[in-house]
Image (tube, rainbow, N blue to C red; front, top):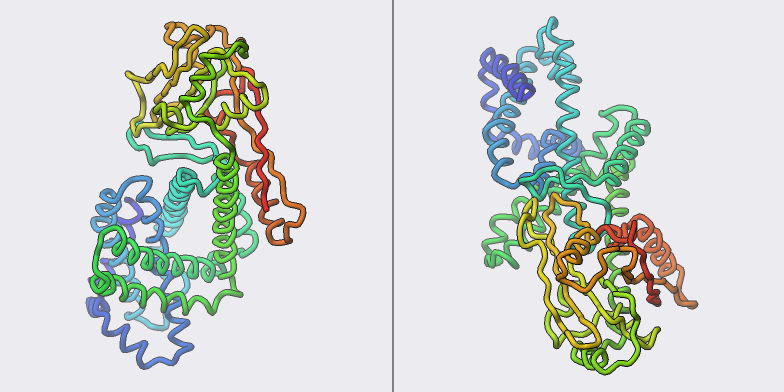
Length: 466
């Protein structure tokens, strides 16, 4: 707030001294300049102009963090008026004497006695402004994880009232290393301008294209209406991208490489998870009624109570298929556990769950034992701990489970990736990349507090990649 107020005052003082600069608010001057200029000059001009709006793209990423309404208020009430005043003020300063130096123009508006405090304020504001990109990155990564497009990283929620405010330690360290590398590699913000300009222009173009698709598919706009609104934006953004494409070798290759790396990561992770899911679905699975019939008529059992983590859809009704994990136990042991507890975890969009955390459903109860489904709910500010939840249920005698967790047997699945022998070089690279991503992905059972104190029984599921 202090930064925007100061640059607005500095600009307003110059505008008051040279009000003729207000004519620059008309876009006709920019149009005439482009019409009368040659192509190379126009490309250089557009490549520089794009740097005026850099930073605006961070607001789009931050909408997942704060929502649209606070960003609208901050932009129209504070940022936009202040930026307008400071840019017009710098133009007015140049009108007073065109021979005055251009680089660092904003700092020439500051009285000499206040220059050092202004530099300190600019430095602090830069640090604060970088938080917008950092928090925006956290939001985008958490959404990508939720969509199954990124490895399961540790996510910490930092606000009780906002589910979107998150902190991702791995990404934070990655950003730190990347920023240090860019500073060392480029040496100055001026040298980094080419990379930043292409990144922002590309982001704006992709956003405009995505909005056209959104308007057609989600908002059900007509093609004509969507084109009238977004086609001009696509045209303008395309001009900026084309202008900045001349700077690929000067630093524009950096955002291109980063974008390629992130997109490749998403493609590889989605491909690997699809192969893994196909391996689960390809296995023959018993219908739940058949599982119940086997359990009622069996003479031999695995005596230790089995705890199985399952997806939401499994065992909700008796017509569902048995979970793949239960199928593996049956195939490999030739017997079912006497008492089986299926555990599913749900995450309502509230910070804490104070009531109705547990819901138990008896799927089958016969003289041989019991099959129970347990649904646990954890708010986004809570660290999900299935082990503690099961202990509470056991103490309340709602499930047949020994209070001593050392007597439990928690069964989990671990996929064993097996590449085909005739796999080509491209597929082999993709397979090795997926193996590497699995190393940074946190196993689901660790995420839910299992495997630290409770004994785990790991069932291996072979997943063949062709």
